[in-house]
Length: 347
Image (cartoon, rainbow, N blue to C red; front, side):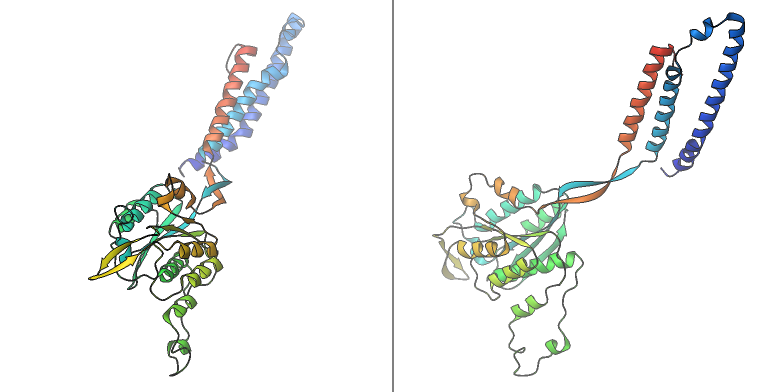
């Protein structure tokens, strides 16, 4: 639309010229009326419409055309709009206990159903990432609004071995920070090569992971933890939750399983596994979030509505061409109506 700019500028420059020509025309008209008045008396001049009735319709037409020229420039305005915006990281527990069938068909499949419903209910302004954790490692899908990519990643999740809730939370925090452009804290040379027998040599890996979290203001973000709450690996979940709270990142937890649990065969061994709601509640409470048990909810969709980053008021540049075009048409119609009623013509 840039090719319209010269035309619009030229049209606006012509406005004073049009006004000047109109004034000259009116002066000439008054001169002719005065000439005729000398021969026909004052009767002709008395029949003339009041001045404001003659000038108002042309003035409205000119104003309408000027506004229409402005509309062609596609003007924008800064408007404060409330909207849901932020980053959500779905943290999946893919430990072996998630294969238990005390929730139909299994805890893992129930968690997938919840995650899919949540993803499909979010607006495009919410970026969603996925972290899956077990005792042996983790996988990450960077925050995106590509729904199809997220659903494919969820479908690929399968139960593994071991569980580390704390590791899953810290990886999610790291993902949020790196996606926002924050830099991870790199170990110093002393930390990288500790002296034999020093305290750093015996430092557990979880402390290192905590200390390497990126520093700075984290964006509006939410971690949704989908787990049965069982934890049998290092990294204290409460320390990880405190790190989330320190960075103003809320953790909402969804618990899958039953308190009574079931006996599950893993790698040839029979183990009893049950939902540990207490640890999930503590993690959420510490970070300012909430705990939900989808099995106890009559309508799980009510849960998904709450698992959303906060509303933000953000200034956005919004095109207001339609407002100017509408105002122009309205003014032109009013001018035409006045002209027909008062002058029996359209100028």
